[in-house]
Image 1 (tube, rainbow, N blue to C red):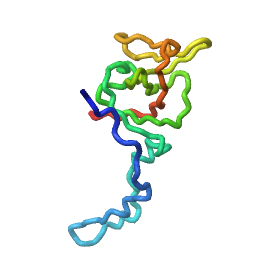
Image 2 (image 1 turned 30 degrees about the horizontal axis):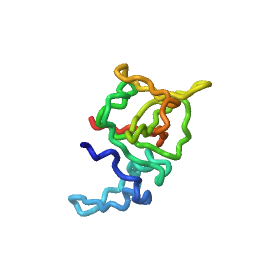
Image 3 (image 1 turned 90 degrees about the vertical axis):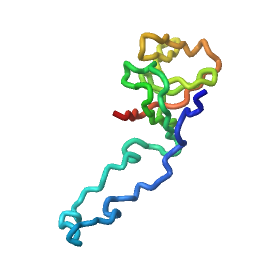
Length: 143
């Protein structure tokens, strides 16, 4: 049984760290003149996390969304504060199991649509134990 469903609840570090805080080493003993004009590095937390308390990380354990570019083993950045909208990829809980699907709503009903022909769409009206958990904001993949 695979117990690892998601990583942590949120990022708890600081965004005040810059490259100027990293000590420079030079073989001559002096820093380079360009060090004063060095750009600060990219902080992935600033780029990927909009709302820290509402952001969670999940590892995808299915090929149900492969045609949407989400592959088995990818890390999903899920934000619970984002508004649910038609066409968004979401994480839902169906009978205690986590699902990643595309949300589609028409006039009379709502569906969870997989992006793989091997899976069927789920009519949300057919299940009483279905909860929408959060919206997938980003996908991280190791190459």
